[in-house]
Amino acid sequence: MRVLLAIDGSISSDRARDLVASLTLPAGSRVRVVGVLEHGSELFGLPWMPGVSNDTSTIEPAPTERFVEELEAAEREIARRNVVVDHVLLRGHAARAIVDEAREFGAEVVVIGSRGHGSFSTTVLGSTSAEVVDHAPCPVLVVRRSRIETILLAEDGSAGADTAAKVVDAMPILAGIPVTVVSVAEAGIPFAGAVPGTYEQVMEPYSEPIESSHQQCGELAGRRGDWLARDGRPVDCEVRDGDPAAEIVAAVAARGTDLVVVGTRGHTGLTRMILGSVARNVLIHAPCSVLVVHRVAAPSRPEEDPVAVAGSAGRS
Image (cartoon, rainbow, N blue to C red; front, side, top):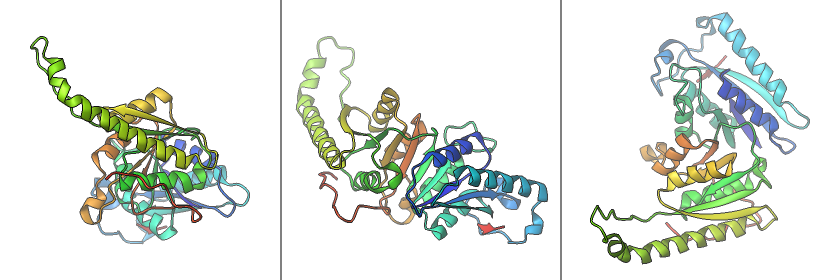
């Protein structure tokens, strides 16, 4: 397995480093620790600009040395038998450099902290993390907890959810971890206003669709859960009613889940760069780590097909 860990010396990236150090990696895996030294025009936060010169003389020695020390320390902490760990110091716009390196390295997952060192480091989701999630060629694990002992998988019957489930099933670092499959029945409930005695009458035409939606979501979650449990993995299912993102976040909070896995729309072109609103809101508001899976990444174990689910940058 190939893991790309992006660090910047922040508390959030330290948590990401600790998580990677705790992962069970199969023999022969490779972990690349990368840091990005931003300078010149990159300091103004202008995204996706053309690469800057490779002339290392434009970088001050002291920041470079400190960053290399951080990378070497992370490499030592992650190092273990039968796993190759190295580090690379990149230059340029941080998100672009990380995405380009992930593509060149052939990363199967990018691991990054949720917040960085910037002026807006107190925001819920850092700009670099958000850009990496949007553009990465593989799943991105945005870390808020330094362990993964429980997983919540969001299931809505879509192709994106199907791909996310394949990742949970096939990714070695998630093998055997208990999973809760959550499906949310989304049904519009009318507001009856302040007129006394009208709510039951207004609700009556909606009761059957709501019940049907709840039942369909239960079937979706049940089928997905049965498939994930076929090798003995502990799996349970939950159906909620309401706004999908809000209910997924509420389920995470109620269960104390370590990792929530969400799929995205996975379109091509410009829309490929934009997460669906549910995935984006979960990524921003979940109190735990979030693994975002684009539809372009669809690992599955070759011996089995997943259950059919109904529903719709230079170097130094």
